[in-house]
Length: 424
Image (tube, rainbow, N blue to C red):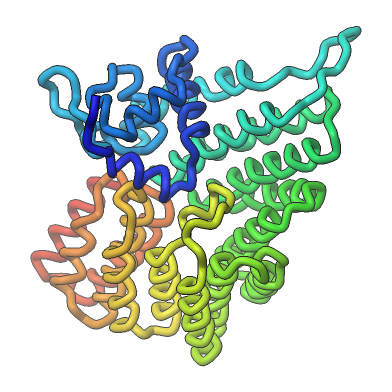
């Protein structure tokens, strides 16, 4: 049966650099987590979804698609069965599907991965299939984090999976190539745990994850993994008010082999360097790196195969980091321009990023004394995302500033009342 190609699902695969094989594995894992029964989706079924030949998935597959992609069935171009209208995905703490999936994650991963041998049993030789199962789990984690941000549950899930991969290595045998790939995956999960902690403003645990990730990344020998470690280390050091360490870590990422080979990684490194130079008030260096980052991104091949975790970096993220750079320098009008550009390019599934950009935009507008516009921008942030740690940190400062600026203004009083209701 002929159908109209499902452009929404095709775009999601392209944006997340996910293959049909990986999506099939993710959907079957999600169905198991949701129902307790193994999924039976195959690649042929996924191709039918992509070609538009299957427009009304059953309830289990529909929920699995929403869990994996962070979008509703309607947003993915499917026609829901029955008369009930699909609802947008709620905030993490209000999302039973999210919580159920995370509570079952350790069990589900345990089914997929080989356990270390018991006493007297011969070790199993690990192979590429074991690596692929883990990579599919990493894609699922990245997708969920991109939607909800670094929740404590996601941090714990990534930490548990790191432990599982390490245990898998210790109790079985593998070739040098498979062993290196497993260390790469372990480092990716540990790095993901570190990022979730940073994003949630839990800096003590983030430092623990950093030390562990550096060790695993070194054992992996993978340039992209080492790049990611130092990039996140730079962000962590900046939050810890260690600007010199933050700059050194960002420079280490920029000097990595992957940044020399791939303009996209080079662009990301230079965008972060711009933020770090702005922290020192060095506007000349900061603006130079913003310009270099844009030129490098313009050269990057969008179809080049890259790790799934770097899928977040695009024009929207470059403008987001340029906006932060401008705000560090007090250049509020320029920051606002970058914020609007970021929102124009931002993928709709990145709800946490959208909330962050809106919060920064509100601060930039307030910096120009545009009180009414700033409050209106802040009001556009979904209440569930107002409670996200980084978003709340920005809005706490924003609220203090508007009260100081216009304590008797009715809009300020209304905003203060609403914000307190949401976050307290």
